[in-house]
Length: 635
Image (cartoon, rainbow, N blue to C red; front, side):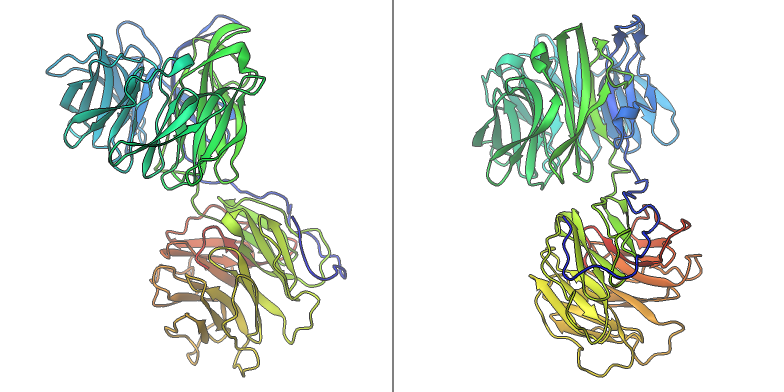
């Protein structure tokens, strides 16, 4: 959606270079995919399976490599399960008798046979504890489920227990509650919950028959409760006392569930949905329990028999990976596939990303199934991002900041002077020097000064912390508030030694700071004055200000890159680093532990925990950069 006030006309300002989607090249995580062996139906060749190494932003490319975990003398191939402990990637051989430990940094590996004081049966699945100190092996011994805990420092067995009389389910996917560390093992007739501190177990939903799929699906945790896929429902279980909270009905057979701790929704794969019997992904609101079909993973599943399959969530919670394992009789093969869900937009973003052990879209592979999905949390999707904006309105997005449109290529009455993030980081506002506001994505238009006579031009914009309003500030210090942004006063009408160059909100949005070119700081509302550079000699003028959400303090930056910190930690500056000058502004990270500094040529430097996800530095621009906005920003 594009909104503005006032007519657009005047000189045709050229668009910034390729002012379409400039999402850059984000620092992506790795997705490790367990693959069982398979046979190509088109030529009969055998595919070994193993651990597929995928770029989660483009699963359709297939794996960059496949790590073999065939360590058995029987010749069994593939990976029956995968776990990640720090830099150690662990693959379980397909016969369940041994593991191969890979060093993800060096690529070297060590093989280890699974043995203990008591025999360890053929291991079916494995999962690591939240702290990585233990690896839990789930095996089948003497018609009972056996759980073995392995210390990942010494690689020795510390505990073993049998879960008789549960009937073992060879297709189950155990999960660990990231908050409590409890191990949850779904079986045919209930879910075993093991407390690793006491090494005791409790059966939840005992004697539950999961119906058509023959097993209870993978359990999810929302940061407080557990969600168990059973028959055509999700059952919410309190993790504190294991009591049933509620049962939410689904319009099909629940296969698996996944959730980002603290997220607003739980996600479930559901088979035999609608008249086409598709496999779809449903989001379930934690607050209300309402269900929403957000897209199809596998169309026309009525021609096939879906089976249990894993789900996983990226480290930042932005992406759900959902597998479908199915037997189809057109043609007569087993195959697996992976889809992705964008949790920010609640949409299925890729439902053909992976099929079979080679990752070739459209290939069906006999007996090929997805046995594990393990996102690497050490190099996750960017949890930060930013937009750079040029004076002609061209927008360039990097990190987790998405492109939602721009004014690049559109005639403007006056140049753009700033940008700030909108609600949920799914949009942004641009502001022009005449006060005109241009809203993109989820950002509503709350009003603007466009078309209104101004004593001095607008020089900046800041959004409220909840992104439901914004302030414009003019060079004479006048402040204009829209949406839920309240007016707390301004320097408008007061004598200034130098013009105002920027504005920044306090962490709670109940105040703001104005900064002048000479370093003078003016605090309004609950903003606390902590000092300034006003009256001090400066090599170059101040060009921007950002607040520290942790302390309520602030930083200011000069056009030569000099950083001045007031009740905020100094994290470094680009002086002497080669950042193309002049610097035009700065922005802080959400936790106050870092900040970005941007140059007019598009170059950008990050300090503290501010990641550098790319920039337009070194790329020819039609017009210079004038500002930057950040996702989940403090100001």
